[in-house]
Length: 368
Ligand SMILES: *Cc1c(COP(=O)(O)O)cnc(C)c1O
Image (cartoon, rainbow, N blue to C red; front, top):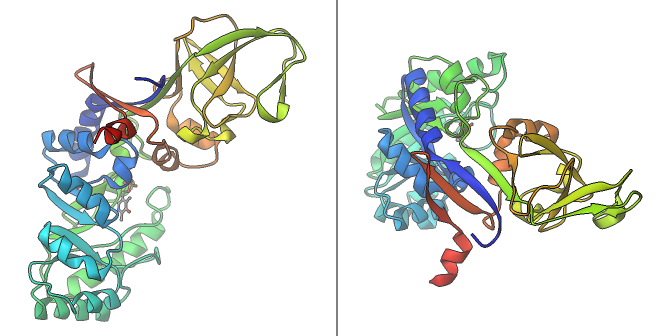
């Protein structure tokens, strides 16, 4: 590793979480690995999922699906978002299933050669994002599929409020979905509505699959027995004593009140370590230390109580500083923090308690 800041992905914890969630949910799982597995690196997530008997994957777009095919993933893949109808041929050639985002989209698709195409109908039950809203639209969609040799193998919806204790909205959405599924003159192989939180908090007797995302990484509203998969680390690259009354970093927003020990970490906002982290704590060697002064693009400074050697590891989030806590402090959700960890950070994969491999994606690409 040439830059001493990295994301650790613990595949042992991931395996543990897969098995816990499988036990608890009683459904087959579609492993949602959009956005490069929420930043974890989809390849290793796929391998671990397969080892746990999960062999259906979902991504957000065609390029994400092709990346998986290029990496020799031959498993079932569903694109959850929009695909340009002119790219349907590529989906058929690569056996990639698509989502019917609207009836108009399907009509456009049917102007192409569609034999061999697999589609999942998306029912919009309240997100008002993508999908068809009425039974009539869904019936027309099924008819179009039959006329055009399209296999309408799946149907799904997406909940807006599965992470809140009050299930009123979720129930309302589910009832709309159920009403449409049961009134369509068609048998679906895949019926799914649950994301991570709904998988363990909402019971139904209609669906046979669930779409698992964030909880595989140990982040759940309802399960507290999952293990954290993601940790973010940096190292002390420089440490010095600063006199009282000096300022730290851009804008001179922090002034030392006495002699202070200031350490520099080679991580900044270009790594996804946002400026808003100023003032928050990181974990160093058994103690917490505040980030002082502005977070720079590539570096930030922390205040320590005592000198530590250069090279000392610093946990920005992980087992001592949960990413959920970081998200709360930054007034966001863990998804946003994970998905914004930049490619510049090396991914270090742990398996059986040991380092399996390190991947610096940009360095790898530059070799080709
Ligand atoms: C991202 C996504 C999921 C996974 O959601 P989690 O909350 O991470 O489990 C499921 N379904 C759809 C349609 C999504 O876009």
